[in-house]
Length: 343
Image (cartoon, rainbow, N blue to C red; front, side, top):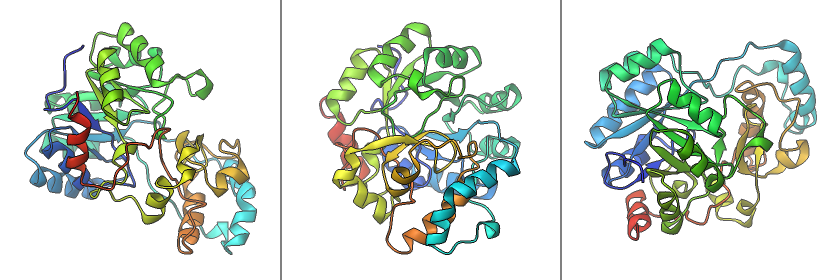
């Protein structure tokens, strides 16, 4: 087994934008795991406030997560095609697409965020969709932060190690939320966790974390036996008391619907795994009309807000991995202890 994390338990709580804030991260860190704060949807002021709250809530190490995608240029014809695909849905809620002003912001890591990190110096900083440019990454490393990033293939893992990642998360196809792919976006080329993990471990010399489909101590032990230094769990914590998971999302996670998940690009433009709902069934989970990540979110956000006002989750991103069996409506620390009793 590779060198472990500097935490009591080999568990990283996956950063999950939209369903958590600093409280879940603090609970996991205080209980001996590595709590993670999702920062990709926070502006500079919000990031500073969240890190201040997190640093006051725990004296233990925590992770701060950012996206490092290349922001696409808005192409009017792409937006027009997307609005045309959504036209029947807009009509259902009397939404005029010409009035849409913007959805959830997902900005790549930038200098302003680096300045905030320099004040807080978190023990761990993680990235999704590769790594930021060398100058920004050097600023993170000068903070003393260990750099983590996700790979969905051996080629991505090798690239990450060569470009400055200290720890690599091998993200299997079972994982909920956004895929971390950045070299090859063909999802049919990607592997499940327990096929990907040993291949990544063999390809790199840095520690590797297993992510995707792990929900109990048997899965954790299996990953550790294969050589992972830790596991990253996200879906398992979605029902915890400290999560901000919405009532509609919580209900879906506890229903039979959660047995059917799929990768979809409808909610952001990037492939992400969630519970199949009405808009995914109507448009197909992967639709060519969706503009590139993260531009699809503006239109879907308007539909989501209108539907959720009617207690309808057909337009909500119900992120969930393929194994929700570990979800429990209990405090996160209690769940972490249960997971780690037999490892």
